[in-house]
Length: 430
Image (tube, rainbow, N blue to C red; front, side):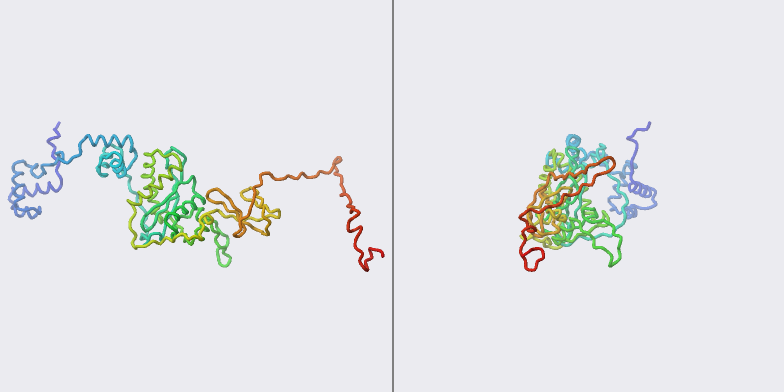
């Protein structure tokens, strides 16, 4: 069997160089012409000719090939890094793992070096890029706060250590600054709560870009679509809140249209999940407390400056009550006995008012209120309803007896007995 040391690996450019040197030996061309073909100096070509005459094909191969580099990372550090990756950072991407190795273990390894090490050990595999549909590119907005993209991400953020959560995420279109909150589900209350937290942190944005989820858009199909028979689109509770704040709501027709927030969730599902894994976070409250600190760290690294200076967010006015605006408001009929039915429960209004309809407010903190216009009404929940037992008439055989109502006899001091003596009245005698 042939020894592996006798196998010579030669690259195409080196093979071309060797063939031209052989032509110099055959005197088909001279050394100056070979230097022009190889784009080398005459002196360098003479050195190559000398080496090929002595060493043969090996004369065109660089002498450092196959030797270990002098700046090579020691094997002990490599084994230590791979051991830490298997123990603590399993599933981490090379970029995030290199950051954590420097931050927590004080080992400076570049992400590309770590990527090669992990690929060689079979611990990391690059995803194949799939062909994407061609879409029109849209430039970023000019100012901070001009447009905010928002969406909800359903993911096992706690990796089985607790209940499954939904991240309501917000990202500014101009700068890429983010905000988010964890909730138990995606719906009206989480959407309002997340936007309320964003406004308290940054201000009121000009536009909100989101999808056509039933929380954000009424997807009911109307029968009459032609004017003037077309009904006005009924607003959802979220749309109504945004309209009261003067926020324009824009609905995306595809996930790719709001790709900035979609890519944000892909990044957070990798980085944020592993950050919470290292800290052992198990509850929604702990996750929100950590996320509040993590947002500043994330924005400091990944946000970019806007094209134009200035802030398009509107400041909160004292006359704007976010607690009232971000509440589920439902209109109900006020019955004659001043009771209101809401969510299959009965409530008694204590105030005496003349109103046909009242509004029930459900706040984000779980409280409830009933209002008529701007007036807040006092009410009590009715836990037990009075049941009136119907009167049953006696029955003989197949026939039910007819029970006549007793005749009303007025008392002696009633008006109909005493009366007033009116002139000309035929009912009274003089």
